[in-house]
Structures are given as C-alpha cells and as structure tokens.
Image 1: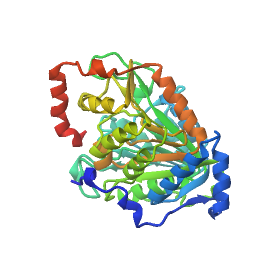
Image 2: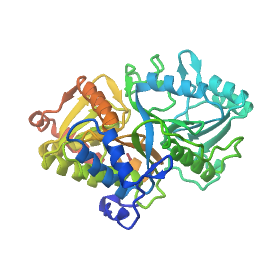
Image 3: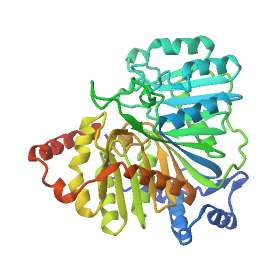
Image 4: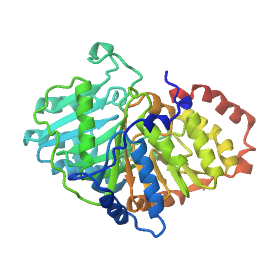
Length: 441
C-alpha cells in the first residue's frame, strides 16, 4: 500500500512543465493572463493572493487550467436534482452520468429512469457508469428498462468477481459524481443520485430507526471549456472498464468562453503514484495566507493533512473546519473527534453541525481558491477511490462559497477547547484505538 504521508509532495511537480492557462484559442500569453486575473478578482488587495495561488496551481498541475468558464454553486439535493433534470431535458446529443450511488431519484414528480428512457428513445445517446458497491442496493428493475431502451451501462469494478472484465479490485471504488451533457455542460460534487437527498420518508438517519435527517451537500455546475476535461475523464473510465461501443462519441466539441472562471479539473485514481488532488490540496493549504474554510463529510486526515492544517493555524491563518455531529459512519466520526485536541491547541476553529447529515466536500482559501468535488478529507479518497474535483480560481465563486460556509456556521456550534479536554477518558481511548484502522475509512 502506498504511504502518502511520507511522500515529498512538492517533488511530484518539480520536474514537469507548467501547463499554464488555456483559453478558447490556445495558451494565454502573459498579457492575456494578467487581463484575465484583473477580471476574476473583485476585491482590492486580493489580486496578489490570486496571482500566487494561480502560480502554485500551475506549478503542481499535470493538466491545463481552463479559462472562460461559467460556474454556479448548487446547494443540497433539491437544487442539484433540478439543475440535473433540466440539463438532461435539454440534451441534444449525449448524456453521460458517472455516480457512486445510482437510484431512481425523483425531481418535481419526474423519475430519473423515465427521463433517461425518454431521452434515449428521442435519439439522445445515454451512457451510465455506476459503482458496483455504492449501488449494490439498487434493484435490477431500475436498470432493466434502461437497457431495453438502449441506454449503455457500465458497472464499475463488479463486486462479483465472475462479472469483472478488468481484473478484480474489490476495494477500488468509483466515488465520482458527475453529469456531462453534450460535452458542454457538467455538474459535479458530492451529491449522489440517491433518495437520501429527497424530502420524503425514504431519507435515512445516521442509524436504523433514527429520524430522517436533511442531507447537506454541495455541487458545482460548469459551462465552458473545462467541461471537455470531464468528458475526457468519463470516456477514459468507459474504456478502462471495457464498456460497450457508444452510439455517439463527442470527443472534442467546440467550447466557446461562457464566463470568467479559471477551472482546473482533477481526476484522481489509485493508479497515480501520488493522487493529483492530494498534491493540489496540500500545496494550497501550505500557501494559504489569510484563511482556510473546510467543510468535510468524513474528516479522517492523513498525517500530512493534519500537519499542514496545524502549521497554517500556527502561522496565523484563520483555519475553520465545519464537521458533522452525526454521521452515517460512526467510526469516521470517532476518529475525527480524536483529532480535535491537537487541532484546537494549534488554534484551528472547529464547528459541528446539528440536525443535518453533512456530506459536503468543499474548501475555500484566501477568498480566491475554491474546490468542490467528490473527494473526502480522508484516507480512502487518497488511497482507494477514483475521484473528481474542480478547482476554481477567482473571487466570485470563492465569495459565494464563503457565504455558504458562513450560513452553515449559523446552524453549528463551535467546539470549546477547555470543555473538549474534559470529555470522558473512555471516549478519548476509543478514538485512539480506531485511528489504528483509519486507512480503511
């Protein structure tokens, strides 16, 4: 098993050429880059930080940063499903979906399965990748009408070894959540195609018999050149999993500028010596100058992640963590709380939500660097999962994400260091024990 805690993260990019920023007509010149920076910065004094974060992102990136995108944050399942269904309804050529959990979700009375069948029968090519483990509870009755209508489907790393076509890898999971329509519009983030996000009794609590909780999550809608990278990553997975021939393949659609956001799409897999998102994440935290606001569904940090958060707080950066007081993984919650004392001692501010199931995976740094995606702040996202994340450089998205973070804090309580240190000894020992198994969480 790779040990990323001991890997010199900065060395991964030192020998590689800087991809730079790419616009609709190719790489931007220095003059064009400066003009772009001036447009995407909206606060006096932020331009220097934006330039420095952009330079660091270019240095560690293994793929180009794409200019000319329009981005829009989507809060929770209702807004995400409405945006997804609208995008699918408007599809003209191709619909590509890749999700850890796939169920027959409902939005405004419309079932996903019925919508996909209708689009396929109308001549739009529909392709679906779902994770075998994540969707193990989805009945065959959901997939049967799709297959009958001609929808192409790939089961990622089947649990049953007899069904595997690409080598058996039970622990390697496709944790991505993304929709790509016509190669021009995409939605990615933490929201699964799951009924847990619907406002109905089928939503689940943190344990059997517990009251249903509202699932708090965040997605990002992207229009513009960056969507091509998502389309490419979907097709790479399709080929790697030996998916059937597609009816239509949109390889390189002409993507015109739609906005001013610079977006870096990162597709991480265990096949990479060091996961690309992990390198970007650590580099950004290490370069933080003013603030780091992090929302995490499962906070099981690696040694390097812990060190970087602690060091950032000690050098005066305002580091705030928004975590859940309930979880569908009690072990992850126990391990997370076992880390609180060290973080609090360093000056990190920790807040726990109440009455919601926090599933959001977002980070915003210095009001200019943001990320929304599927990667959790845990070992599994580093070691085992295929993930998809979007880094957005610019003040507009960062300010929107900071406002969302501030709104979430209003429904949370800050952990008091003095009170926390007085919690029961058995509770403290329980956390230390389960940290021995944290690489599996």
